[in-house]
Image (cartoon, rainbow, N blue to C red; front, side, top):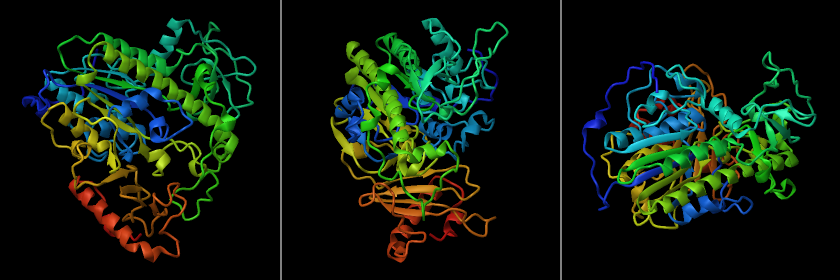
Length: 533
């Protein structure tokens, strides 16, 4: 692997020795499985009776499921940076996706770098969407998602297209009822929800030889449809097969940490027909909040024809069909990874973590995508399994977050834990009390005041800050009781006439948030103090 100079310094954690606390013959292995843009409730084990996820459900049955886990920031790159380091997005200096090539990322360790410094063999496969310097200790060459100025390695998208070439799934012009998928460059059959539905694809060739079709370049978030080729002609199969092969090749007797980072169910929402056929859109449920008028709400809708699709029940059902199909294909590959652990006799000494970076609104409140502090976007799945150490079938309802994964993984692998902004979740798993009984999420690019989100007990607050250069806040803060109002339809503050009734609850959550900001050295404490709910 050829790396350009990025000014790495030796990590302070490299000098300490590991500490084994469990009595195993060797440190537990780590199998870290991550999806992209998967809602917390897009799992059978989360109570979803529509979706088929038998393998992830099996994982939950054998371990602990955190029912109220939250993204550190409902955007890919910041969230993934927090997952790796246990730091807030401010402390890792990654506030948005544009910071992926930030030259000023601090020299703080990832959990895999700590494990590597303590003798682990570490490998990473799939979607890498974080600052590239964090790949420095992996034993394999990690391809960035797209081209990076910090490496000459090709992007993962380029690798996926090569994988399809090798499978014999050639690029060809779209037929009359097809469009070209922006990621694979292969044709698919669009659904009516697709942003280009009804538009004839321009089949002028990209190159002079007339072999590669030219596609209409729109956002991948507008691609919704069905791929008629083989089931393994998909991003999930490409990423899963790489990780599975790596797991098969792991040498016995040496602890390892292996990450399989699936791109799905992130857009483009194109899924092989085998998986789309598992779901009949007409019988899928529609969000109870789809017709929310968003009065006295922290978010408003974009007024574009495409965004209006998510206020249409039939189109949301179409999205669910392909989205659920993508999740089910990922679930199959999760099953293959778990089966390989069984085959190699590694299950009993392997910590398996399953998590997503953020969710997807999927018609909640008539909205789509992520970047919201509503539950569909910020509430994530999180499952951990380590037989004999983590109780099987355990559920933890206390709110937790991405910030806690770094310390938790290092705790369960017997490592000394470097400074971080989270805490190990082992106390909660063991049924002990933990003074940290809340979770925080942050929107990093807060020129309009945020928002910040804090979840504690049944209460959730979304607060926009009073910024120093604004005479007034530019958006509406919100307080919800998720027990009585799980769909977040009734903002108890803002212009609610009963707002005084909830003043104490709001101020208590504001104080919890303030204390967290001070502890984690998060900026904008004074702006929070000056903010009236």
